[in-house]
Image 1 (cartoon, helix red, strand yellow):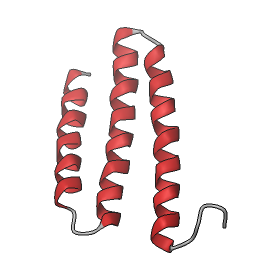
Image 2 (cartoon, one colour; image 1 turned 30 degrees about the vertical axis):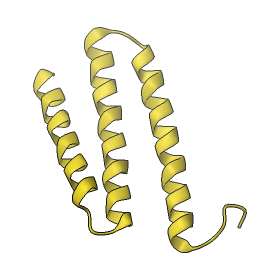
Image 3 (tube, rainbow, N blue to C red; image 1 turned 120 degrees about the vertical axis):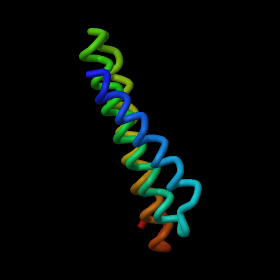
Image 4 (cartoon, rainbow, N blue to C red; image 1 turned 45 degrees about the horizontal axis):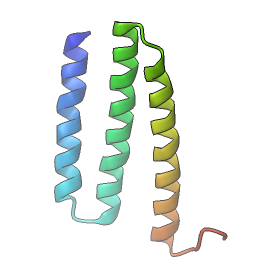
Length: 84
């Protein structure tokens, strides 16, 4: 279990690197979206390991906000307003 958490943390650093060096805005957003998924995985593993259930609530809130951010960026890149 500890090895999985270490691997996920290493992948988080790679996503941060991609977000910093990404040539386009879409590349950076995909890196941030993947980073959110990795954080949810870390929260789930820590919840299983420690037995604290509130970490699942944090993971759910994180994934909902990540989804809303992805939808907002897709609308922005498409050139439409939020009410269209």
